[in-house]
Length: 144
Length: 144
DNA sequence: ATCACAAACTGGAATAATTCCGATATGGCG
DNA sequence: CGCCATATCGGAATTATTCCAGTTTGTGAT
Image (tube, rainbow over all chains, first blue to last red; front, side, top):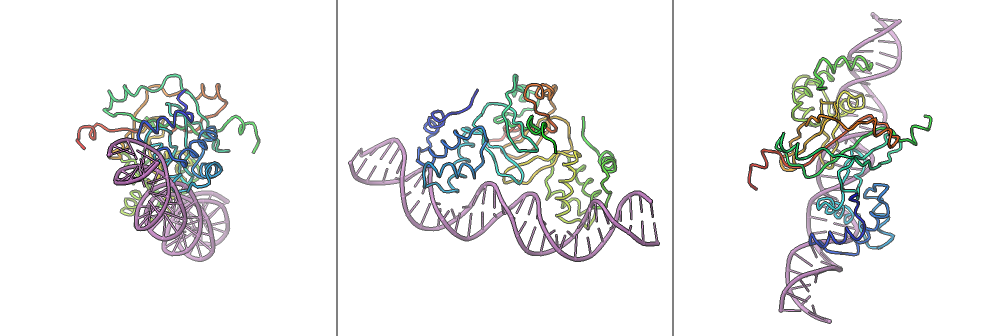
């Protein structure tokens, strides 16, 4: 599994020459303690505020963008719904329930070989996103 | 291949009980003649206007939404970039170039079995989206 | 320790894709 | 031919995200 924890994230910040600030630490803690939720910027903002009172929404946006551009986290992009963030940066499928909106990680045994893709189409893959939409177990149980 | 052409789309409209209007025909023609571009709402709007002078942007949005909710087309969703639409509704990978923004379809020989997913996680897959981001052949050739 | 400077932070204003709304028009069935 | 559910229209509203200009702050070098 390639799920980053707090230590991983901090050491990656150092590696990339990004500064360790109280705001970033608060955001990292918020990300880690809500990783199952695949949190969005609003939730991160609220949670990060609890740890460090001085975090602005602008900073949260800038930081999440920085982190995903540097490969620390994955940004899941949606239409008319805020982006969500995933600490699992390995190739995997996000199962997204159309009814309750829950997002789950699904580990795929053998990934599509990006080497095959490069050979066949000359395209170099740097980042994969796979979303399967449908209905989760819980929602299937419930009527309506 | 499951790439819908004009006839397919029209017959699917009838099947679903959706009305055939001049606006929808113009939008369908715009979609079909730009299918390689994976067009967005703005392009569809411009192109559709050429065919039928009376098409509003609101209608384009409403129609593209209707079509994708009814499975006639696939909606590709992005952050801070307009949604794009794909007439290829089969399971396939969209290769998206980070430099020029071009979107290409990549046919995958064996898809991830949604039956496996259902068995292992109780999740019923209704719609798949796979995006691989990276750099296309043309952009790799060019310096800078 | 202290300095200097690039990087990060802030809050408010700006942006832009998309949706909403109330009114009007129209396709398709009886 | 007429009805009515559905589609269309244009403009206003929404909302997540970015931009901006000014201030603060980590961090590496002195």
